[in-house]
Length: 439
Image 1: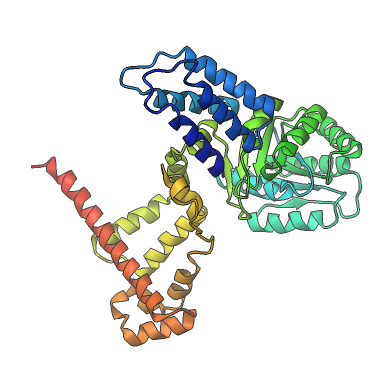
Image 2: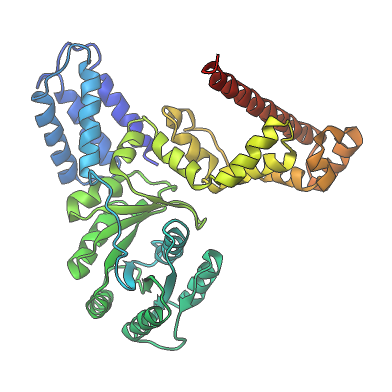
């Protein structure tokens, strides 16, 4: 996401290269280029103009240190303003009720129901909450079945009333059931329409008034650009929601919705959703997104993703195995699975500074690990635990069983051996450092 905007802003900053100081004259062209970049990213003219006016005001009044070049100072000012425009600080969702009721609204096709499933998993696995999904979309055919399917994937219960057309009745009964069973959070999936219409607004307004939810979230497809901002305004006028969820951020989005919604509605973006996997839900941090837009990466989010998959007990066992030189292909496979859970390879790599540009024309499919997985699964338990036994005939058999070539099998085994060697070297180096203190 934001690749085109990142490139355009980078070109804008180059206009200041070689200048001795920031002045109203030499930043005029830079600001004009920044405004064009924002308009191309589908940011509204008013928001783009307001943004550039604020940047200009800060830039002209800035005290540029001797050690800092005007180009660098401009990057810093634009970064801070981008973060401010998108909300400055992350805003948590309110789940303090007993039970906490979260109302989820949005148009059809925005990814609203899928987000309900993702949020349920997020609250269950990361916050330790007991969650109930309430199927209150009584308008769309098969909406209840879709929610049931998602609920099964994330292992949370669903409350529904087949044939009932009154969403308020279903929602109230769901809350009563949650209260009686000690469930912490009720996520209410509501009906949508293809476009904003009076019937939809009346229904969501009535449901909101009846439930008085602890948290109301508006889900919007980031790929719809300024249309997303207009629908966000309409829903905000109807229910005065607490926050926004941007979906399909991994698609062909120019980023205009992310940059405009807070400025237009005054409501913070709380989550971004990417892909169909239930784990693919990220908390929205404005400063980190500003980092990524300006090509600085997002190492903090990358570390947090790694920590989510980190199991201390497993790490200790792995540590012992490496120390004894007993790291097996099974261990190698488990490490790959943990990396897969963190997200797509391209998205993870793009969090490293400067990688967005390097990966622009590189296609890294989501199933990049599939051949490796097939090769390892074609090995016998003995072969996984004793990789030294993998001679030529065994490798041929594994290639046939996995539908790959002998070269592919050799490559995976070489990767395993290199990983084992690097881990052992890293551990030996760490041990030597610790022993220095005893000499």
